[in-house]
Length: 557
Image (cartoon, rainbow, N blue to C red; front, side, top):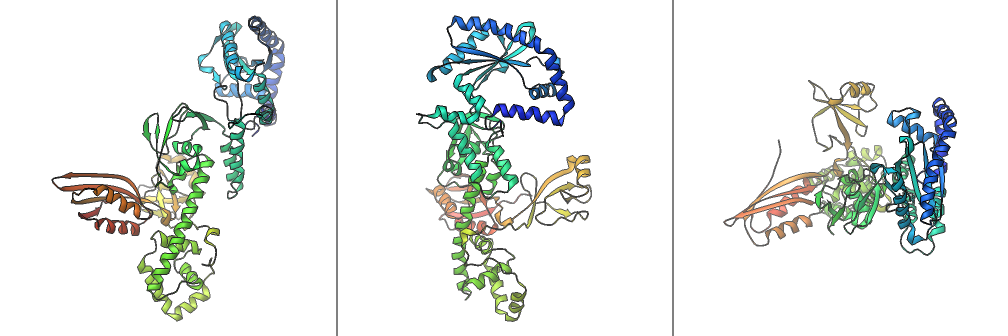
C-alpha cells in the first residue's frame, strides 16, 4: 500500500523490516556484506560521479548527484529472482541526478542528461525505463537507465527534476504543491478517483474490499492507447472491456465490440502494453451476467453489477404488471397475501424473485393455473398457511430488495456446459456449495465439495481429470440458440427480422446470415436468451412475419 501511495521511503523501510523478522539470517548476512564493501562502493560511485560532473558542468546545468546503495530487500529480491549470490548482484548501488528546471523544460533536460550519460557509459537497451513520458499511476516520474560502469559492473542511474524527486520522496501529498493553476486532470486526480471508487462500494465484504482496493491501486500496470493516441494506464491482465469502462461508464455499458490494433477481438481479450483500442458502441447494447467474467478491474465490475441490478428491478416491475393481468384471467386479485402464497408455492425467497421470474418468462401460465387450482382447495391452503415462512411481501419497495440466488443447476467447464453427473457420497455436496468435477473411468463425472477430505489427493494425483463446476441460478443463465429460417425472399426482410427480435425482451442477436436464390431464402440466426419460454415466444413472433415459411431450432448432439 505504501508503494501504491508513492511513499517509497516508507515502502523500502517496511520491506527491509519485513525481511529482518521473516528471514533474519539472510538479512544479517546482506547487512554485514554491505558494510564490508561500503568503502569500495563509495570509491566506485565517486569515480563515476566525477566523470559525469565534469560533463554536466560543461553544459552549465544546475544539478546535484546523489549516490545510494540499493535497499537490503531489493538486493535480496535480485539474489532470489536471478539465483545468484551477493557478489554477483552488480547493480547494488545507484546514482541519482536531480536537476533544476522550469516545468516546460523538464522533459527536454531529462533526455539531454540521458545523452550526456550515455556518451560516457554504454547503456543496456532492455533496461531503459521512461516514466516521464508515461508516469506510473502512483505519480512517479523519472528516467531510469542501467549503464556498464568501470570494471564491467552495471550501475543504475536515475534522472529526475527537483519536482519529480520531491514527489518520489514524499508521495502524492507533494502533488498539491505543484497542482496550482493546472486545469487538466492530473495523475493525482486519477488516483484519487480510483481510491474514491474503492471506498464507495459499500455492498462488498471486507475481503472483497481489500481485493478491490489492491486492484484499484494497480500492482502492475500496462500502458495502452486510445484511437486518438491518448495514453491510458490499466492493471496488468485488464481486458478490452475494462478499457471501455476506463473511458467512461456509459461507453462501457454500451460496448458492442472492440478492435485492438485494427483487429476485431472478443470483449475478454487481454491487453498488452502498446495496444491501441477502439471501442464499438450501440445504444441497444446492455451488459449481461457473463460480462462479470470478462473484466478484472473493480471499476468495471461495480458498474456492471449496478446496471444488472437496475435491469433486474425494471424487469421485476414489468413482471408485476404481467402477473397482475395473468391472475386476473384466473379470477385472482394480486395482493400481499397472494404474493406470499406464490413466493412459497414456487419456493422463492422474496417478492422481487417472483416478479423477476415472471418478467423473464421463467414462470409459465400452466404453473400459475396449478397455483390457482391449489388455492381453490381451502383445506390444503389452510395447512400450507400454518407451516409456511413469511417471505418479503409485495408491499415492500422493489428497489430495496435484492434478488436471491436460487442454486438449482450444476454446470461444468469455462463454457458452463450441462453434463450428466453424480454427487459424491464422501462429502455429499448440496446446491450452492463450492464444488469441482472428477472424471471417473466407470461412473462418469463425480461431483465433490472443494473442502472434501479427498479433494487434495484427487487434485494433486489426477489434475488432468479435474473439471471446473459450479452451481448457478437457471433463471439467471443465458444460453445460445440457433434458428434456421426459410421462406419467400422479400424486400426489407432483414430489417423485419431484427425488429421482431429486438422487440422481444431479453433477447440479443449474436449473428444473422441470410441468403436468397430465385425468390427463396434460407437464413440462420444465433440469439442469446434466458429460457425456453422466451425462445418459444420469439419463434412464434418470427413465424408471423409475412413470407416466413418455417422456423426450426438447431439441436446439437
